[in-house]
Amino acid sequence: MAREGERPRVVFVFGSREELGARVERVIAFAGRLDGELLAAFVEDTAVVWSAALPFTRAVSPSGGVRPLEPELARRALRLQARELRARFLERTAGNGTMCRFVELTAHRFELALERRDIPLFTPEQARALIEITGRLPVPDELPTAILGRGGGPIVAFCGRSREFLERALWLAGREGCPLLLVATAALPTDPKLERQIGEGVEAGRIRVIRGERTQPLLNSELSGIIQKEARLLLVDPTAGVELDRILDLLAQAHSD
Image (cartoon, rainbow, N blue to C red):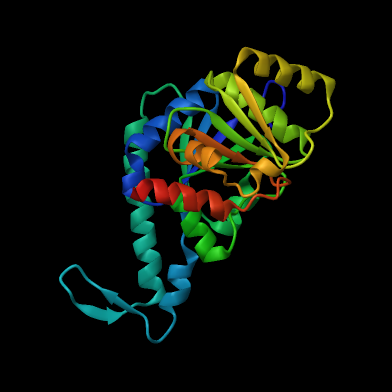
């Protein structure tokens, strides 16, 4: 969470030119509403470089030619991809009024570069790709994971025991001016100020709380439908005990329907 007087930073992770379409426009607008900064991060697929060192790995050209794939060739391809994405990103963000930067990092260096003020934001596709490569997302335990949803409805926040996460979810919904669905997998942190804020939001219809067993399986039909079609942003508290794979599966199903 950003300290008082400190600007939040949206760290948007992407890896393909397709993600420089309408999604980037959404992320730029999101960072602007937060009065924050936007850091676009190309996280290098190190598995491509590793696999290039294997004797049976081959590169297939657009014309159909086949040749051995060497590590240096793989690195060069990744650098070219990052260079193209950087140019396209800076072109799209020029003059928008939000402080924007582009960086290229390995997953390990990306995780080390994150700060407490950051909101690490992934597309569902990039989150899935990174999990398949490393077994997890490169996000420190003290930071929440944010997944860009496919709709324009509520922020869906999977809450555990973290008071800071709950504060962040409430703040984000306030800045977005959107409803907030709190999915509480444990008792919400005890704090009179937060309890009052949540109570007032519930009375006003801006906040809804789902507690206890209704969240297991993530995945009663109502909650699944909201995740797939309505949620604009999904936030996962590291203490919530929610399997991110299940959320990504739901988003993938919505995309294929």
